[in-house]
Image (cartoon, rainbow, N blue to C red; front, side):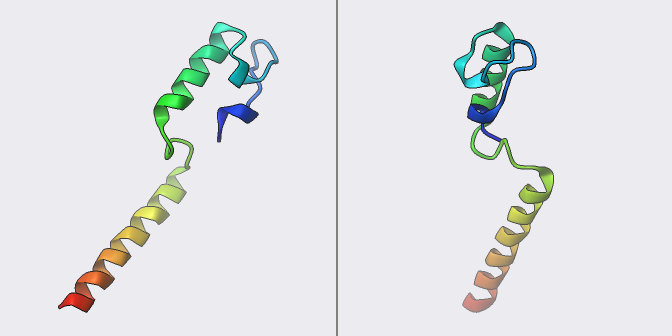
Length: 63
C-alpha cells in the first residue's frame, strides 16, 4: 500500500502530508521499505516461485 492513500489515526489527515509526528514517522517508514515493502508474503512467495521456475526453464533449455 502506498502512503498517499493512508489516513492517520492520530490526526485524521492524509499520511503523505505529515501533519503530526505519527504521520511523519509512518511516511518515513513506508519510504524506507522500498518497492516490495508493501507486498504481502503470498505475493512475495509467488514472485520467488516464478523466478525459480524461470531459472529452471532456462537451465533446461541450455542443457
